[in-house]
Image 1 (cartoon, rainbow, N blue to C red):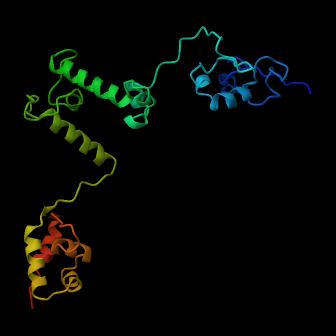
Image 2 (image 1 turned 30 degrees about the vertical axis):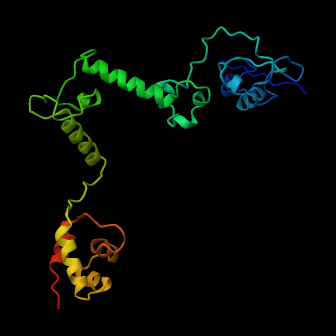
Image 3 (image 1 turned 90 degrees about the vertical axis):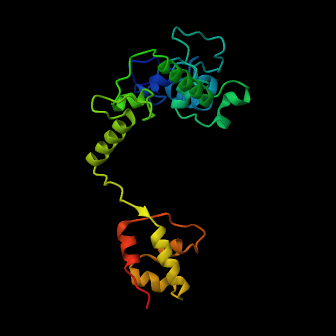
Length: 242
């Protein structure tokens, strides 16, 4: 069977050649008699071989699989594990990092060390001066409102960051969180009604509040609700024992 010509921008016999458009064996000039794999075969071979995955994507692969003596003019693949870059790419659990089994630094450890060193440099005044009273100041390490000198308007970096996030949320259509109050008065009222023989269903019906809310205020679910909305508090306090 004659082969269809396929001109791609990457070398044939490589994963990059496959990505560039050489998707079938019939299209690739590297046939079964060639010393190099076709682009489609190279993609399949790389998927199951970690050593091959570390080679450049445009590295042609030999059919006999002997890549140990192959050389490449490209720069070596950047190390991933044991670096903050590896952490950023998703290796965040130290127990799952391959470096842990080798006794080397994990990605989580590398990230932690980087953050500590960065914070130390910022505290020592190294780098671009922090513009206090801005969200960027918070991102650069000024996160304690008690220590922040604030901007010209007296707003700390942490407060500026909080306001910035709130503006973004409102622009995205996210409603502000409902105001809540201490549930102490509601707890006292619900438990007083319970001591007078009121059932949870009766209290729920009289107040218009959910039975789960009433049960949590009564302390009969194992957890006690510490905060309630103003509407819930007003409804409970308005009920009179009869």
